[in-house]
Every structure is written in structure tokens, then in C-alpha cells.
Amino acid sequence: MVELKYDFQKPYSSRLRRKLSKHPKFYFFDTAVTRALQQKLSLELTPKTKEFGKVFEHFIIKEFIYAANYLNPDYKFSYYRTENNAEVDLIIEAPTGKVFAVEIKASDTLKNSELKGLRSFKTLVPKASLICASLAEKRYKLDDDIWVYPWAEVFELVFNILH
Image (tube, rainbow, N blue to C red; front, side, top):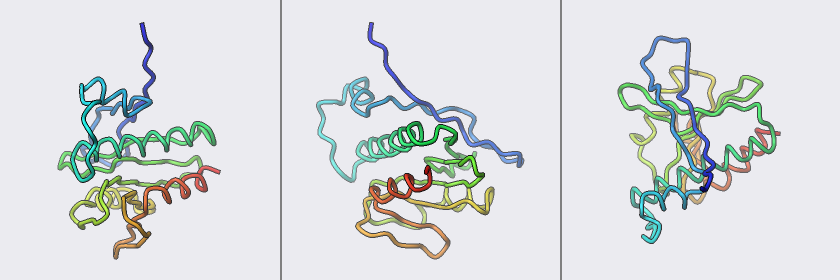
């Protein structure tokens, strides 16, 4: 029998009365395990497809969790989803109380409508840092305090956060 290692994210919880998802998300230690269980391992991952986006999101979330487990295990990870389907892929709560909302997009160009989850989360936690990890070539700021980062820079940001 083979033991499979996985992590899970609990939904973000708040004392405010808002209907949020209450179901956890599960992430296997390796994206290939998930693809193998779905019998998609032999299929090529093609950029700009839904499958590529899922694997990209899974990879980024797992790397955040690995970094925190190594550098500072007191960080909390969750996700945010409302009954209206506003969603943020990853919420990071630092022991200091600082909160980071991270949306993950496997795209180099983003539409404002793709980041509605970050805007929704900002109404719940006004002091949260809003970050989009993407395939963009350069970091830039949108007009409403959302920072779009190339995904590799997000890891640098996280390592600085976790220290």
C-alpha cells in the first residue's frame, strides 16, 4: 500500500456575517499525483487551457505551504469563496496579524473581472495585501491596490514575508 501525502486548505473564516464556503480544498504533494489519479498524466499540459491553470494554481499553493512549513509553521493558509462565487485562491495569515490575499492566474494579461474575488475580500479585510501571481513578465499595480506579480517574484515576496 502506498501512502499519499496531501495538504488541505480550510475556507477563510470571519466573524462578519457573510456566507462563505465551508468546504476544504485538498492538494496532493505533487501535481503529477493529481493528474495521474485523473488519468491525465500522459496528456500534455498546454498553456492557456483550464487544465494548465489548475496545475499552475496547485503548484503555487503547494510552494507557499512548503515555504511556510520550512521557514515559519505559524502561518495559516485558507481560501475565500462567497455564495456569489467571488473567490481568492489563497489567504495567508501571518502570526503578526498581516493578511495576504493571493489570486493565481496562469495568464500574462488580466481582465479586471478576473480579480473580483480580491476586491470582494478587501471589503471583508480592508488592510489585506492584494496580490495576483501570474505569467506576467513585469510587476505592476492596478488602480485599486492590487499588485500583479510574475509568479517567481511572488515566491521572493513570500520568503521575505515568512522571515
